[in-house]
Image (cartoon, rainbow, N blue to C red):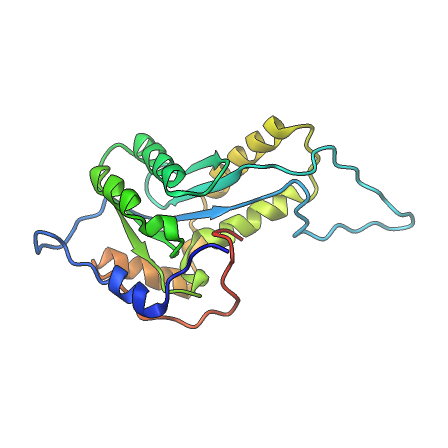
Length: 218
């Protein structure tokens, strides 16, 4: 099980003040999260009438985890890693900065342990990226969560020949879905992004409607 932080630990880590005592101007506020979409995901119900239908899927599993960056302003990014550790999180941050070279970036993220790692935070500072951590068990505050859900729905009816086909499908679908602003339209997600835009990213713990993920995705 991935390391999570208690509400009190979240409060200490989230209640950060600008180092120079001034408000920060963000070029964008964006969602950052990990997931593990698979070719067998069946979030979308398939119906058949008159006769049974068997769908054979040659590709059974995809070993790489997906790390997604859902940009409201800027370029969204999805990348694939064998493991979710601080080193691969740093690689993802570097890819995000490469695709978004101008301005300071604020990432709304959950409390996965590698996000809080000193090495991750040090590299994020060097890249002019800062994390805004949502309260534990409040995944509804992260706008990327419904994007992952829609991505899995689009996987359901598809058949993939191999891993390259699947990763290309994930990339194309994620980037296409990321053009929608509707994922941040929920009241909780909008409240989180508004708080970040107002330079007050630490928010009080909020009761979630569902259980927190044991893995940093959906």
